[in-house]
Amino acid sequence: MNEQMPAPTTRVLKSIYKKNSLDKENVVSLQTDTLCVSVCNFKTMEESKSFNHNYLENFLHTIRARGRYSFTLEELKKEFDLPYPTIKQSLYRLKVKTRVSQIRQGFYVIVPPEYSALETLPTVMFIDSMMKYLNKPYYVGLLSAAALHGAAHQQPMTDFVVTQAPAPRNTSNKKLKIVYYAKKTLLGEGIIQKKTPAGYVNVSSPELTAFDLLENIHTFGINRITTVLQELYEEMHPSRLSKIAKLIDNKANIQRLGYILDTVVNNEKLANSLYKVLSRTSFSSVPLSPQKGRKGQIESKWKIIINVQIESDL
Picture 1 (cartoon, rainbow, N blue to C red):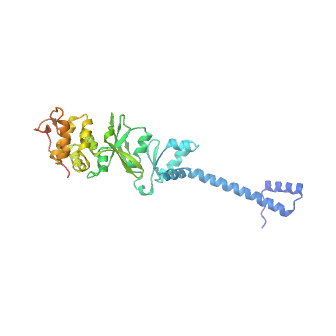
Picture 2: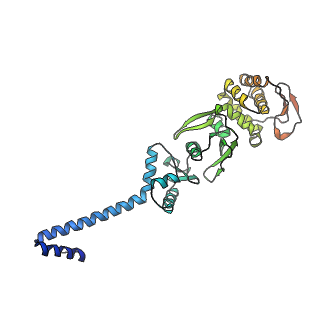
Picture 3: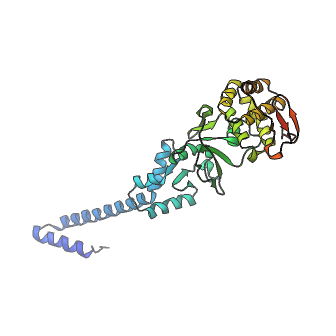
């Protein structure tokens, strides 16, 4: 069956035939070439549509190949000359597929298949990139740091990050919870780095972690802190503990930590390293638990008012 060419194409070819006296065979050849160009143009248009649809997935594949797990909205705007609603719609499609997760405004993480059930990444795999994005110094601290050092008897459901004041707004949703604690200054002496699949992350040393916990005793309580210290002390070193103690502007917490290490943990070396720091100056009696008042027997060495009996979970 002979198919009719589209009218415009037929007119063009007939004109060429009359002007150049082409035979029918050459006309058929021209017709075939013309239709081939049309088909090729159609394929190019379809490929372009496919690129526009998958541009973001291609971008994610590229940055994952570089070892990265996170990206920002600003990066996408610079990479693609597209309207914001278009980018937003593409991000929404990937969020529905659990391919990406939004941690905070403008900051996203890529969710590999092994974390699809979690629907996000563990905090330690993106916190370094995010805090750089926020231009804030930081370290993973408190119970989160203790868990990274092996004191995971009470695995925290919340991630704790210490940063310089003012602290960012806490991150809280059904996928994860991050609480930020603010300090005027961060002690560089007590910050170490731990390797993760996404790179290195700042973490408080075991010694700094112990003091940070006591600094937030109203939040965590003396019993929970003691339970953590009974596991954490194995990673602590007397010389490092002494160095941190000299930088801590809180004699009461040096006394409390020394008392717990001495009488509950029963580690003489760690306790003595703190007592040497205290003995160089005068110090007054302090309650073991600040929440319980000052009534109780005073322990003579550390001048601790025993106003509560420690009840550890271990």
